[in-house]
Amino acid sequence: MYLSSSTVPQSATVSPFVNSLGNELTTTVRDHQIEQRRKKKLMTRKDPNAPRQNRTGYNFFFAEQRARLKSTQPDKDRAISKMIGDLWNSLSEDEKLPYQERGMKEKERYRREMCEYKEKLRLEAQGTAVGTGSPPSGLPMGIKSDHESNIDLNKVETMEVQ
Image (cartoon, rainbow, N blue to C red; front, side):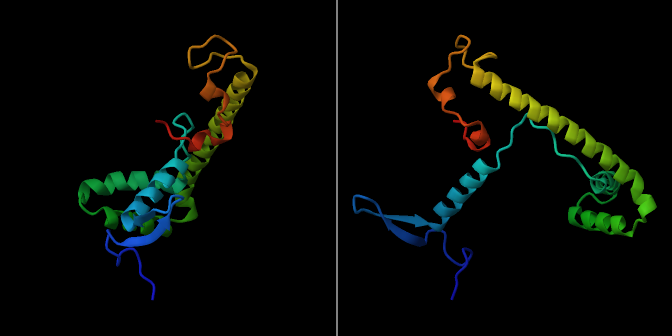
């Protein structure tokens, strides 16, 4: 018989662990959930300077229709979303075309901005490695603080700012 986390009380003991001193450590379901959220938050951090993700033709259609329907039915968010999905599916290819063209322009904008962004990151990484560019710590050119010299640029997204 398997128990889901919804059937186990929040304070129930999940599993005992014994540390190196022989003391028994226990974790609760709640502790486990909190830890999982922390890990997920660390993994999903995004650079605020990165370009915004492109919108599709459906996103443009959805925004337009939602603005129109929200004024007539303010408390029915789920129903509005379902209606818009049904409307989109009932459109012909010719009716979808203007929205899809806007989506393609948006996709090109995103690709262009992403290339510029990646180039900027590459140049900043080269500048930091060579000692050019201005150090953010206020130290003279070419001198890095201890924590700056140990940063792996591939793992910058997963670092937690304290």
